[in-house]
Amino acid sequence: MIKIDKAVAFEIAKKKVDDYARLDRAEYEIVLDQTIDWKNGWVFFYNSSIFLRAGNYIHALIGNAPLLVLFDGRLLELSTAIPVERALSELRI
Image (cartoon, rainbow, N blue to C red; front, side, top):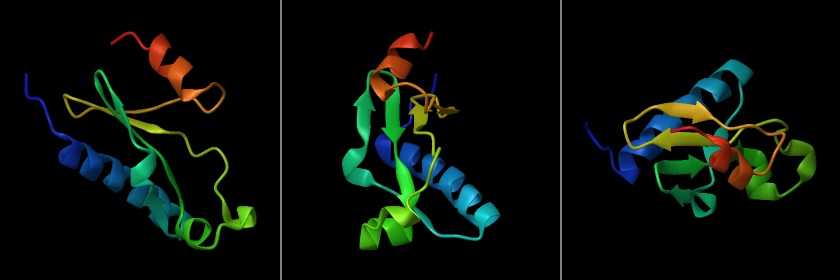
């Protein structure tokens, strides 16, 4: 099995975030300092660029699910209804 590294995982997550931004006609960014290194991959968080620059919650995204990129390159969206740690513990990978 091929095992990707964090840089490749970031690019996979970035492509997904860019797709969302394009659909919404907006600019979104991955928040690198919030990335979680997990036993089977990485969890990436993202938000609107304007919120990340200005910090005004009126520009924050709602329902932007954390993105899990597994070592094999698969991308999964985690639940927004429960804490990330719980979502990861409930995965059967």
